[in-house]
Amino acid sequence: MLMTKVKNTIGELLIKGFNILREENIPSYRLDCQLLLGKVINKDKLFIMLNRDLEISLKEVEEYFKLVNLRKNKMPVKYILGQCEFMNLDFLIKEGVLIPRPDTEILVEKVIEEVTKNKYETLCDLCCGSGIIGISLAKYKENTLVDCYDIEDIPLEVTYKNILLHNLHERVKVYRSDLLTYAINENKKYDVVVSNPPYISEEDMKELMEDVKNYEPHRALHGGEDGLDFYRKIVFQSRDILNSKGMIAFEIGYNQGKEVMSLLEEDGFEEIECIKDLAGLDRVVVGKKL
Image 1 (cartoon, rainbow, N blue to C red):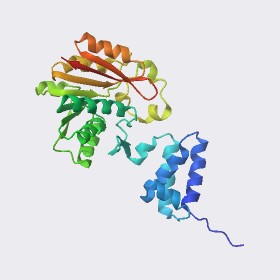
Image 2 (image 1 turned 90 degrees about the vertical axis):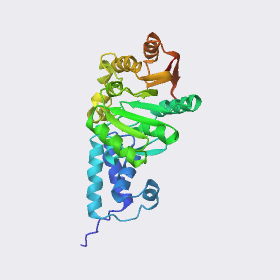
Image 3 (image 1 turned 45 degrees about the vertical axis):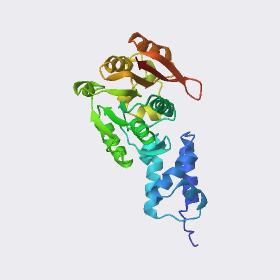
Image 4 (image 1 turned 120 degrees about the horizontal axis):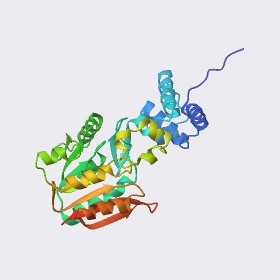
């Protein structure tokens, strides 16, 4: 009896991948498999969808299932892909930096609005991670100079690569610093301090989803017992580096609006405002040093 050769077509590989991830209760199993196979054969999602009968080499098949197994073990798909989209821009990411969330775009959009209105020019992206906030601001506001700060090796490396990726090395710099210590020591001054700092409380850290808990850097998530440690430090330090009429802009947790607004008020900030996300939850707090 003749043995039928198994064809490793895009369609067959997708179905096998779907079944593996679906058994692990991964809701995005279909999209994830399309993206992972696209990475292996260097094609976009549309190509994958339109060429289901295309045969794939054995080497590519092995690589595909290797990536599917990483996803099966709950590694976030964007870490596997090594890239993500934010503010309609492409960025490199890797384990050791947070995966950008769509909610953070609300922070960037608010800062862009204020930069335009107030003609701000010097910006500081604090706890920069992959650099997405500072780089997006520089990309959309071409009159700005941006300094990005982080204390960890991997964020510094990834931010630098993203600066080069977007050809912004003349206007965006990245420095190692424990919060604003470097800026204070160098007598730097900024019109805007923008930050998405670690803000998850001790209690909420225990409730994180498995893919976040097991793969994303805890140091970039954990904001102390009540989640507010970094806001306190940044507000205190910012008085030394913010220009008159300068602005501080934070991303916050959904239940931290009142507390962060109070921190700014107690430190003499004015025009304090809380902006909600698309779900109607508190997401961004801004205030001005007048």
